[in-house]
Image (cartoon, one colour):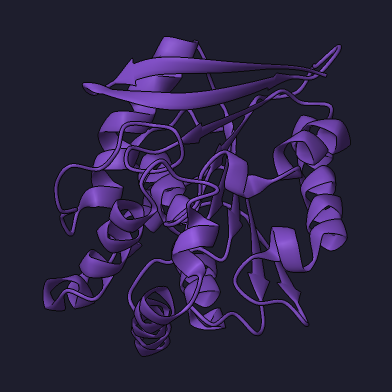
Length: 258
C-alpha cells in the first residue's frame, strides 16, 4: 500500500491529510473521522489495517486544531461538529474527488459522520465507533474527570506526541463539552434522513456513553443498522478490541459490495 501526506486548505484552514492507496482497490473509499482529542497519528496503525482488511483506499485527516493541522486559535462553539459535517467535510471530499465514501467515525467523528450523512445522500455507508447523538450525564462526568487528569498527570506530554499544541487541542474539546449550553446538544434530527447501511460498534464499558446512544440510532434511522456490542471494551473499540473491530468492518464492507 502506498501512503501520501497532503496539506490541503479547507474552509480557510490548512489540514493534514493522509491517503492510503490500496493496490487494486475496487470498493468504496473509506474516510476516517477521529475523536475529539484524536489526529492522524492518534489512529496509530488502524487506518493501514483497515485498508489491508477491506482492500479499500483510506483517507484520514486531522481536523482543525488537531494533529499537524492548523492550531486552534479560538474557542469552539456548540455547533462545531455541525460545522465539520456540513461545511468542512463536504469541501474536503470535493477537493479530493471522493464520491460516495464510507465514513468511519469514532466518538466526535461518529457524530460528524451522522450529521454529514443526514444532510447528504451520497454516503455509501457509515461505520460508527462509540458515537454520540445526545449528551449523557456519564459523558459530562468523564470529561470533567479528563480535565483533572490533564491538570495533574503527564497527559499533556502524551498528547503532545499527536498535536502541535496539546493544550489548545485539549481545552478546545474539554471547555465546550463542559459548557452549560452544550447540555442541550442533540443530533437525533439527522437520523431519519440517513438511508445508507450503518454499522455501530460500541464498548459495553464505554466511559463516555451508554448503549442508549446506539438504541437511539437503531430506533430512528431510515436504513438498516447492525450493532456490535463489545465486552471488555471502553471508548475506543479500535484499540481495546482491534481484531473484533476490524473483522466487523471487513464483513460490513464485503456485504456493502455484494
